[in-house]
Length: 268
Image 1 (cartoon, rainbow, N blue to C red):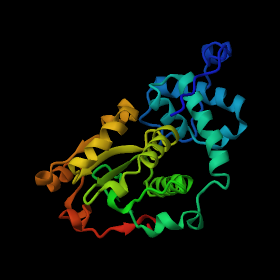
Image 2: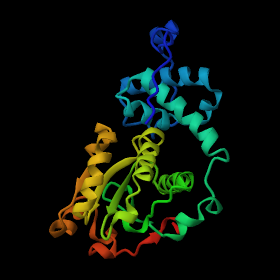
Image 3: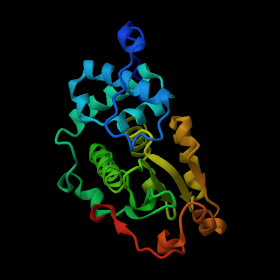
């Protein structure tokens, strides 16, 4: 995966001395940013000034998005700005219309491999992905990337005010060689980590067969440390009890002993 580093000689903390000595805190929604620290508020302002000078379209995003990129880079303004500008460049080229339409991803939609239903105890929307329903297609990698963007945008649209993350359940039951789409997995991981930072709240991996663990060992080094801390492999015998730690029974999918029926992501 490509790593972007800040341009030399353009540090946010030395390129504009006035911003350092007299930071202008830009707050678009006081309530939404109420859990921000003073350091975060100051750095949101610094980063906004920097990215808007590089790409005027940055003015269209809210402070919460700026904060997510900052948090993803441990509040390092230069690194977060480089990451954000890379995101904008990708967004303009890969999703020029601002969103992905169903007509662009018919094959992935037909597989019905991702569902959305319910919220966890923190109010985060819940998604369930069935790995055995995804098949590698070497000629349609971009279509799968668009499907990932479509699904992530759907999840984000379901987040209630004040919530920025989702909870995911990756069900690996029935997974086999035909589903071993390493290139697709890494593409999805890149999109999640580089373009939707701080959106994943928790990932439960359930029913993982031994064969899957071989592929997991290949993927694991590409997962950043923040994401690794959010991943939990669930023992089959403790599946429901583990889910209950994060989700009320009324919000757990029926297939895991709860009460909700799953809804395909495109219908959510």
